[in-house]
Length: 356
Image 1 (cartoon, rainbow, N blue to C red):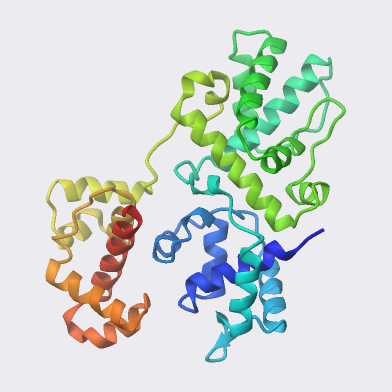
Image 2 (cartoon, helix red, strand yellow; image 1 turned 180 degrees about the horizontal axis):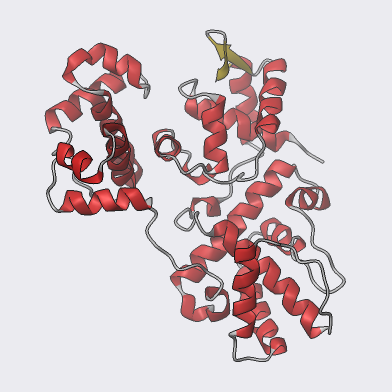
């Protein structure tokens, strides 16, 4: 089994971030932590497709991988900080060689449904298994998921269908087959291998890597890309996939509930101080909400929080210093800009750059 993909993943992330964030920050991105910092960093360092690609990643696995890269001389610690790394000349050469063999699947870019992808996949797996067992007369089996929300959703899906179970299974099969046909073969194989049925237990994502003889890190990425492609297609044309569309959670915007409440008050014209007073939240929390709105609401107007002259000054400083770290920029600008304004300017710049 080839394991070079994991090195490509690690070196690519370290190359993009270049010592400006810790290894913990990288882990939070891969796990899909719902924090403003993780989401902002994805935009800053152009790694949005990798957000939430390893939601079950254990910290120890990435630490072991970084130690491996360190031992091979591909990365080095910055200023003795065991949490921050940069590529060595040998690491740059190695990444270049690995990039000739590896790349990230294009379908990872479909992150608009990232919050529902795990539940959708669990529901689909359980639905396929349950229908297969039932139409073969089996009413006692070990379900692939024991999560109450998932099992209840699948129960409602099956009971609420007017079609006979066999017809429902056929409809699900036809829709799924038509989608799998459009996928790269390896991605489709990895997805299918995870499905269980009557007398046919599915594999774990790690096991699919062994089955198709690729790095287990790569099997996780391929699996996630395939799920995102499914969700993207079904959510865009649900009328073509009515059975699969029923398994999707009701979509809401990607804002946290608290940030959404702040957004409504901003639209009513409340000032920053009035926002903290009305919401009874700290300055820091309101600042986080405004950063989140900037990253997630297209065209969100930040002029009342960040004058254009200050914004331009911050971006020029960040460009001149070749950094997205707040402290060096703040040190150069001193009292001309607050930490919040620096964060806001960098967030806005990242969004605008992504849109170009």
